[in-house]
Amino acid sequence: MPARIVNAEIDSGDTRQTSLEALFTAIDAKDAAAFADFLTEDASFRFGSAPAAKGRQAIIEAVTGFFDSLAGLSHVLTAVATRGDTLFCEGETTYTRHDGKAVVVPFADVFDYEGDKIADYRIYADLAPLFAEE
Image (cartoon, rainbow, N blue to C red; front, top):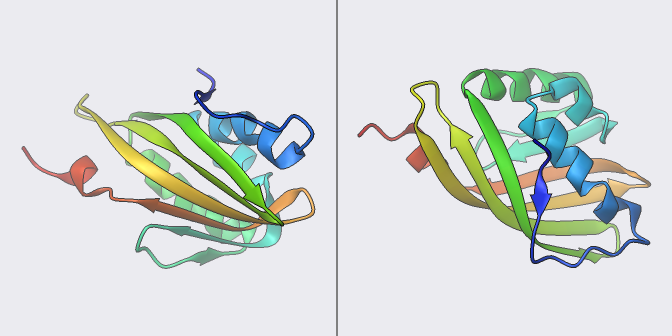
């Protein structure tokens, strides 16, 4: 299922904004290689308080490890804005654990672009609920 953008105005003239659906669809498909195609070769990727992965191959390895820890995930974007070479978005991710439990977590992402590729990708989300034992 493709990622959804709701209640957010997308600037159709800004290719960074119009490519968000494809970016998040690749993530939701757990396709690390397709995700990495949106990044520069020397990109930096930081998820929450984890150390940043640097370089496309290191990012693919880090993202693959995370994807393998999940049965599935899906994103809904609710706000998008740009300022200069930086794009901001927020929304909710529904993570499905291997035990079948779905956990919804709000997030905010910051993307610094070099041309049409992401050079620095930062995710701000609290994943504690995803890994909490109940």
